[in-house]
Image 1 (cartoon, helix red, strand yellow):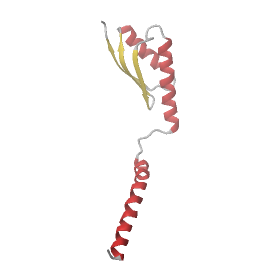
Image 2: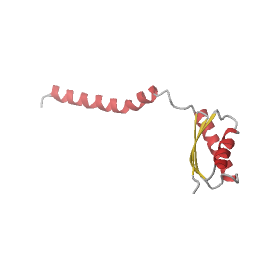
Image 3: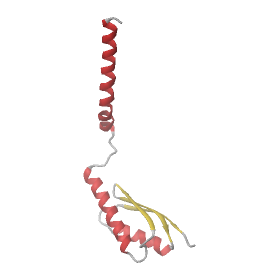
Image 4: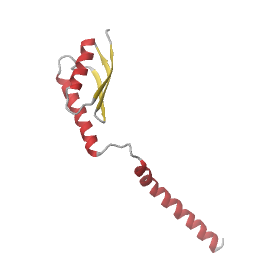
Length: 111
């Protein structure tokens, strides 16, 4: 192998390594849909407070309710035993400061 071919292979290897190392930086910079730190903390706080509220409420305590908050919109999923529990979960979620909307996707299991 001559020196020129060896230099081309070495250059190509360095170029590929540099591209691989820089790719995450470029993809991160292009992602404008991520939350700010403040928004993430606000969403996490709403979720934690709501889960605690469910744990102490006599109507929804012990129910299979998952809480997810994104941009101050609360999504409830899982199963409750009655319409009253369904409504109570929505009422608890809407009372927290900062909640913009509640999407109640709970299922009522009357068995």
